[in-house]
Length: 116
Image 1 (spheres, rainbow, N blue to C red):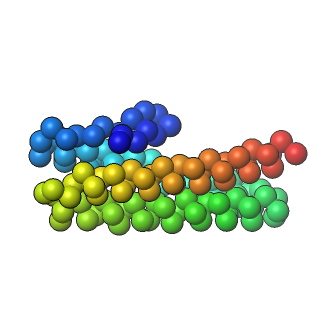
Image 2 (image 1 turned 90 degrees about the vertical axis):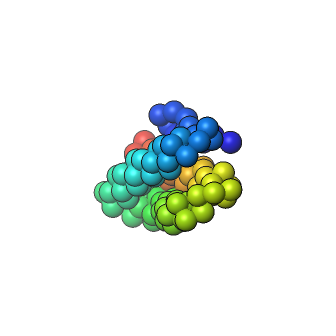
Image 3 (image 1 turned 90 degrees about the horizontal axis):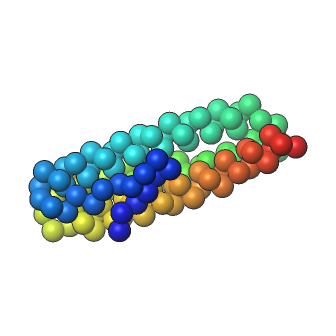
């Protein structure tokens, strides 16, 4: 299962060790992009009204937790580099999906708050 970010797909890299490393590096890059988005969202939450800020912060915390779990799982991939790489990658991709959904939920709160 290939995960997509807002900017495109994450490659599967199942063609050999070099491609697997590229996949790990790409997942790290995707996580760093999401970290920046989450940080920006938290800034928006701090600037928003109190009721909006609380709702955004709660949803952003879910996104942050998914980010941290994905980051920890990604650190385990080199240790598991053999047969577990595909499973580990799928786990990271699932966490990225969870993070994306939580981010979108928090972003929707910010947008609703800004339009009121």
